Image 1 (cartoon, rainbow, N blue to C red):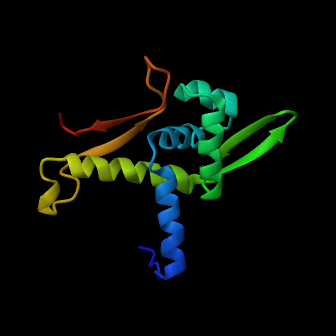
Image 2: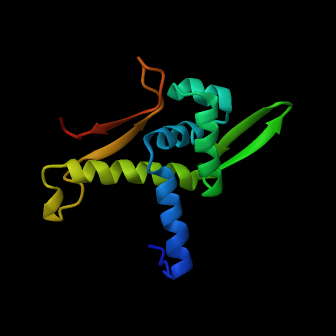
Image 3: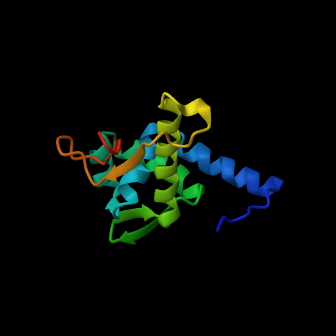
Length: 137
């Protein structure tokens, strides 16, 4: 059953704001991590190898777009994804990117037999990763 979305100007503006918020590699990586678990700003900074101030700026943009929520515990602020729709958005971006890179992407034949799989963590780097799995190979 497919959901019908009635597009209006306000809905289009909100949707574009969400896409713009995710359209930065650092923010994408932050969201990916936060879709798995709640983390403090310092942990996020370490995860992506950035300064805490830079991560805070990224989180402010993600919060303004409604993609993350926060809670305070003493002097620390913890963030998490606003809901499962955030992970779905990120996985959708992976699928779209993989589809665009597939040799048969322009033939209208769907995913060309490829399935995107989300891995829990990159073993070597200790960071969330995305891999392409090709069934039957």
